[in-house]
Length: 116
Image 1: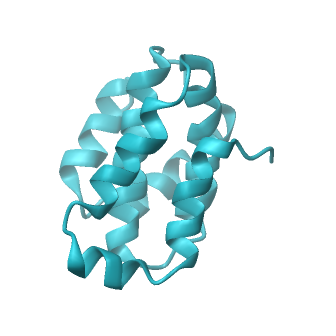
Image 2: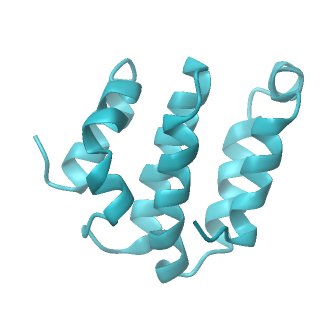
């Protein structure tokens, strides 16, 4: 899967000691998401959704499930389309299971993509 440079800050954060950064700054992931999303065109945001899906399904930490789900939602909004990227379509059930404990994210994703 091709990696966009704007997803790299998220990849770096997930590979680092994000817990310490998050403990020092409760807005750490919000700022990171803003940084990632604000630099993407709608087409790049659409493509980045599948990259975040891949990160999400390989992540075991619940806190990161929330933030990956929230980032997917922000990318979907930035993409300005309700078309579901292929990777998300193929992993819809797994994504739903991983974000089910975060109903705000889970329900908004369902609404955006017109899924039940």
